[in-house]
Picture (tube, rainbow, N blue to C red):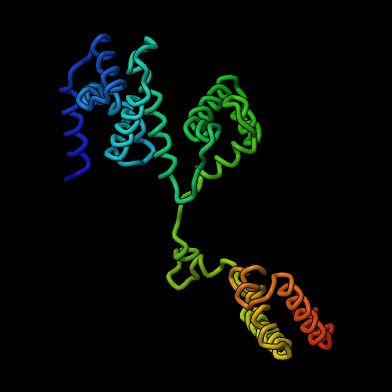
Length: 291
């Protein structure tokens, strides 16, 4: 089923929906708020689906499929219905406009680029108003017989929208660029390099990996050598206290070995001292590897 056919079908259905007067609208809103009456919710949102569709069409120029926009507009309508307070004396359509617009703005910005365009209120205002304000400022300058350079234009846009100059510059760069494949060939030549070939590899060089692996093996050998001078009980305590994923407590080890936790602490301290003494003869080499 094509997008145009689907959107036309939804539009025709929305146009046939009833028009609600203020009294009926409030009654439906109260029934949903107070009783969670889904029939009332369905009737209320259906009545204003034509409003949602009309707003969705205005966002079509951003290149997002109309079906997706209509769906987001419908979700905004449901959010509005869920938060609407009929006792405030405001028509539902007036309240719903904000939620519908906000939902579609978020959807457009999420799908504008693979790189997230922005999410703050300032960034949203820039995204949806930058081109319009820029065009208006240029027209005003032309009527006044003036010419704005890029810096002057950026400053005036920032002042008009109420954001920083750096925010304007950043958004101009994002809107001017487009996503492209890293497998695209530079210069358009068939036998040229792909863009991905010129990206810097942030992983360690092969030689660095070899050196790190060698140093790690050396440290393991020296540690095994130091552990070999310990008694079986000392090795057990050091392994359980220092080399496991979670260090076992002195109290648990004391109960396991049939001694007090203070005695376990003394054995551990003595074992670590032996190991330090055994490793001392490696001197500067050990300090170098431990960096």
